[in-house]
Image 1: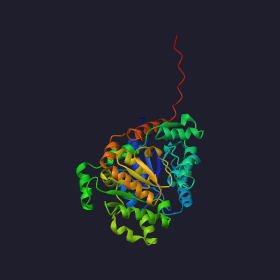
Image 2: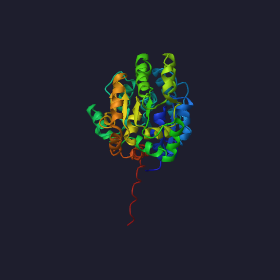
Image 3: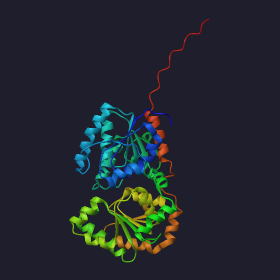
Length: 381
């Protein structure tokens, strides 16, 4: 990879998953990486502690973004990014995924005519009810370099008429993130002991998406199925601050009494627990990817998914309610045979070299134009 000037690649992010997925790329870019954090995830548990845990340099922080409605988040971040890029123009901008932060970064790059690289391009749920679907489609239209994680993602982009020469299949950076941050066996054992759980003897659940938390009926249905599972197997629930607030507002706090509730976990802590879970239940997009690296079964509680690659073997998609409980029990009943089979399967999200491929693409995209050659001097007679 060619050497780029310091702070020449603006890496715009705003959430915990973006920090995780862009850590290795940032490391490879070295001093060329300029992290700009919009503050979409703005509290210490959900973002602040991750900067130290992942070893990332201190970002440039925006203000007034976190906790705001979607339109305000995007507009506030866009205005500040435009001002930043007018004062210190990067050679390229990198955004990842489909967050409000990513869309703001993409629009800011486009407004200033800066080349845009979209990491994790081409994901599609075809669900217009998902704000993320609108974000990712818009970002892909603006991007100059489309880093598709899978051949299926590339096919989505081609089907929408995006030029093939802008698309590269790189793999997903989650593979190297999981491999780099999964704790060793002894450290994983230390994570399980305080919770009174043993390997392959518990369910790990996460719930945070608005479709499951903003509708009290859906939230009640999810918690009811988790508490029913907890009668036969411990259910560990790291609780997102937003989810806790919704549970309290809906008067559902009693449902937590039979669950082993924890504060939000660091990334390594979560991976350590996920590695030994008999089953995961989650509405997270990232968990759909991470379980394919860890070789663990997953029940996805969502109306739709943009990661069908995980559904083929590792996961099953359900709605809140009895369907969740039935799918969870079916997977638990298959026990060690299912977990052993999944552990032997390669992840559909790549070989762990995605960040290296993306760094090489950025080096070519952001390389300074070659100086014109000096005219040849006439040879003396």
